[in-house]
Length: 223
Ligand SMILES: *Cc1c(COP(=O)(O)O)cnc(C)c1O
Image (cartoon, rainbow, N blue to C red; front, side):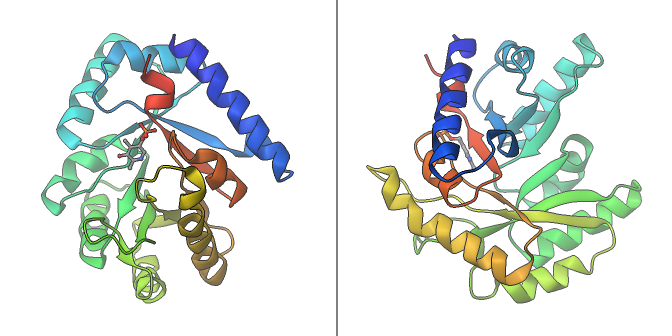
């Protein structure tokens, strides 16, 4: 079932890429396994999805430890996609290869401090709020360039790109302005930054607008 879902997601990626002349192999799928068990993760990995996304530290820690104990050598890259509180940074650094949700200088400074203590250079994305919805996390898009400058000076942090979440919508076309905006911000700051944008319901549009990383949960794990 996970296998069939992955086949469908890959077909959708190929179709979206062909619309805008992109190479499907340039799109990285992060399989979002929040709320799912380790069996689901193992299944996704066995079909080639080795990038796994989680949004809560405690849940991620449990799965990380379980998988490490039972299947040494399972090559998973762990992605933190949820809001990260400063008091959870220490645990996060022990698990995650890429943190998508850095949304303040204070959080970046804490990551930098903790990373220095364990001699890690932590790869991160900067989460940007591209929509006016008050409840969303993410840096204010007007302030982002300056704050990213400050974060980029931190020695134990490596900024790999930008992330955004589009608001819930009835049609994925409604997400396009937010993805476009993230791309414009990226183009104005650093062209080598990757864009993490697009989920089950809107990833085709995200790909059309330049996403390199898409985060898919329901599309892979739901029956
Ligand atoms: C849950 C989640 C996803 C995946 O959402 P689906 O709609 O299940 O594909 C992607 N990104 C973030 C930040 C999430 O919390």
